[in-house]
Image 1: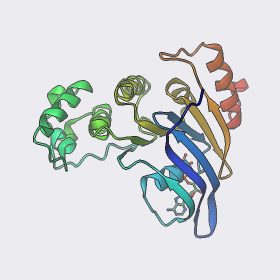
Image 2: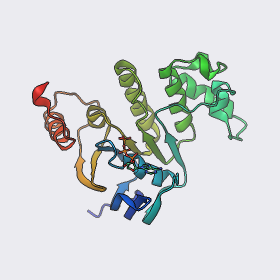
Image 3: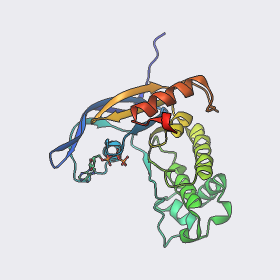
Length: 240
Ligand SMILES: Nc1ncnc2c1ncn2[C@@H]1O[C@H](COP(=O)(O)OP(=O)(O)OP(=O)(O)O)[C@@H](O)[C@H]1O
């Protein structure tokens, strides 16, 4: 059978450096449409730099090579980045011209458990609530590509689990391609179809995870890949 795969994100020999110091070194990558990719790597390995290139955030980087992304891209950061002078729902509808924007945003807020916070000021929300509002905002326009840079990194363990479940629920509905930068190996194992490890400016490892959802920490494939990834990231679990 001839299976035609449409790629959402394509990188060809993408290099980035800052003031002559190389961070990404001729990275090539194809991400099929709808794939959920997690990007792991030690601190400073260039994960955010890679995401920044795809998001069109230029920084001061010198960039060479080629990359393509879909037209509609949303970016989700570790801090919610809500505008403090707009209410929660205004943060979601900002820039939307559709006459029903407010209704759609209200439904989305309801979906993420913030139905009663539409008219609240961001400052009155907890950290987890702010991040839920941010997630709702990023998926409201049903982007083709979601770029997420450690979106749950600052949340407590339980809130993080809830956010991961929420992300999966929303992603399963509209199936955007997702590239998630994370330090959390278990998060990557729980959510992704594919896990990449960035090392020395290159993609050092590329693992597919074909297990269906929901996944469980004790599944054999998860256990062995966890051990492998922790080792790749230089974590010695024998002492814990
Ligand atoms: N604007 C910049 N100017 C100069 N150097 C930069 C800039 N942004 C990133 N770097 C350097 O590029 C390298 C990769 O940084 P990057 O933030 O991409 O890593 P990371 O893998 O996302 O790290 P972390 O996991 O700690 O967030 C680091 O050595 C960093 O110092």
